[in-house]
Image (cartoon, rainbow, N blue to C red; front, side):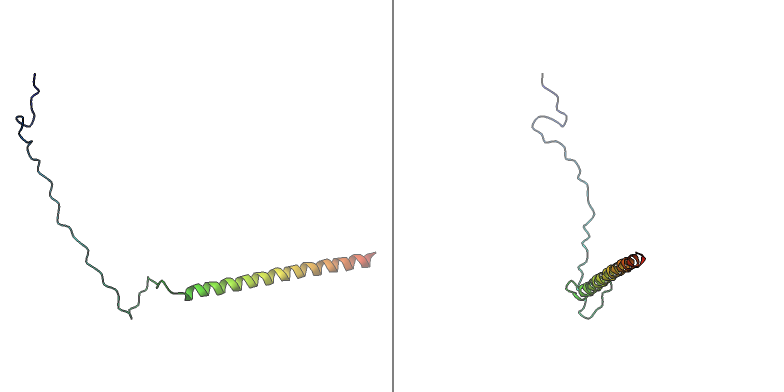
Amino acid sequence: MPTPMVHGDAGSPPPLIPMPTLPPMAWPTPTTAPEPGAEMALVSPAGNEVEGRDWLAVAAIVLVAEAALLWLVACAALLRRRLAMERADREE
């Protein structure tokens, strides 16, 4: 027994389904590059090395200050030890 066709007789194409319509595409407007003399507050140039040099100078100053502080602490510890040894020798 043949199966009944849902979309019509054998050999006929199925009915067309209406396609959804989309709104027209809205393309963004092209932006132009700023003028060479214009200031840009939020964007810094990629080749700006001055800021990197400032951080390098700060890091060098911190490193020298830390070394000087450690040297002073070591000298104070040696002086304290020397004074303690002299006191011990006087008490004997």
